[in-house]
Length: 160
Image (spheres, rainbow, N blue to C red):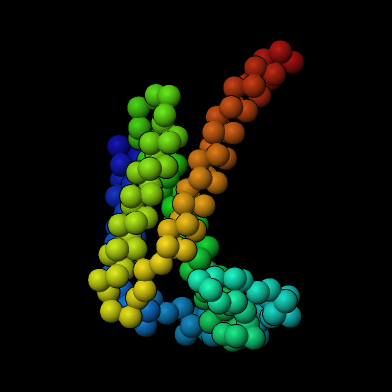
């Protein structure tokens, strides 16, 4: 039951955030308040992120917009990673469980971008779906690795 609640909370977060305009979601005022001294600016200024045919950087966007970009894209990766693991855990055990969780997560990622397209000032992108799925697949692979290693560690602990 808890997993279903977590699933609905995640889907609710995605639905609400996709329905908000960029201005409604802007983190810039909060970042300016919380990071007035621009920590890590020197290190971050060396970072350039190729995205949607552009190179995103502090030089191109400014410190706060670049940090916001990194936070937003990290959120895509982590939320869809968590979503995929929750979906996986809700599925019955079968040979294609990981593939099924990946496909369901992909459908949610596509649906999220479509929902975004209905919101003014928002642009749906295939790149975000790819980023979402990168998080999903990474988390699912880590989960499978953990599920594979855990029994081996237990067995080793019983031997000693």
